Length: 225
Image (cartoon, rainbow, N blue to C red; front, top):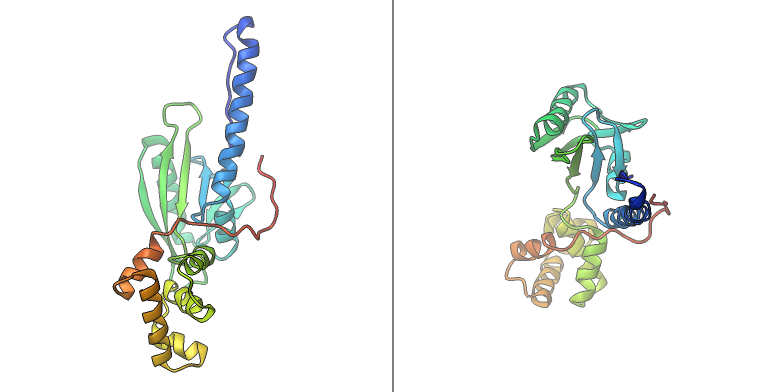
């Protein structure tokens, strides 16, 4: 996970140095827990692509067919065509402090396509690092949509319509999936808009897009060091 190295300036600094190390360790612990609650995948690594930390969302994405994957302790591109752009982006971030947006993958490949933001960190210290921020695969996660539905007292049927709309499903397809008439889905959308105060489907989608990225508490237990 994170590592913070503090050095003592002399014998008198011993106790205080120990307090600082303990505080840094506790901060590292809490930061790890914070990252686990984010629905955006984040990967902390160095310019050689050696991974120092991934959060829950990143691990799920990398194990679920993302254009990037873990190979031992290193992050690698699944497609050879992405290998050089990824290496250049990491080197540029670590050595030159350059930020960039990578478009990785291929629509024709099993991994599909995905955007990755490359952010340089700690350029003023000897151990520089690079942060990758992965895009979410959907506009709004199920947990956030569920809380939105509870907040506005949507019915179970309306909640399913809401989740489908947040996933980019058209009303006609929602009707086909649920085996109901399109008029039924349109009535449900009207009800959702009335309860949420949305002026249009576009406004409803905007509300969903602005929801905090929540991660479900129903997940495999993992110790954060």
